[in-house]
Image 1 (cartoon, rainbow, N blue to C red):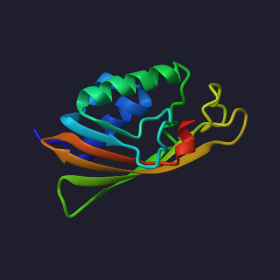
Image 2: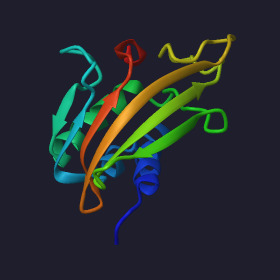
Image 3: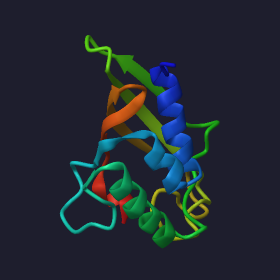
Image 4: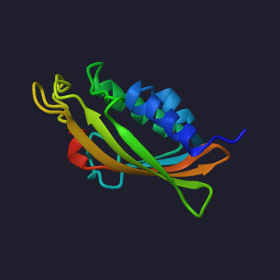
Length: 147
């Protein structure tokens, strides 16, 4: 059964940003899938490039663990996205504006501002799909957001 770009994107957001479930996130990828954050500098806490479902699973589990239970969670009611299909039916682009509540920075993560205004983080993700799974996900965001 083929999954729509919307279903794939929503599963990705839920497994990653919402629940920080490395197993569920990794299962969205093909066995040889690639997850990239090309703007991340070498040696950053957030991985720049992961190849293969098992490396994605292992590295993201470690990253989510370092974030701890108090990690930032987006406010879905305030956040939004637009999906763009392309001439290639296996490629779609997500244009995302994620809003973190102003009092959501209790862990020092930087996107929310304790006692302050909401913080909006804009990013773009490019998905390449094969057989209903993510073969390549390129995630473009400002690296300082992951400090």
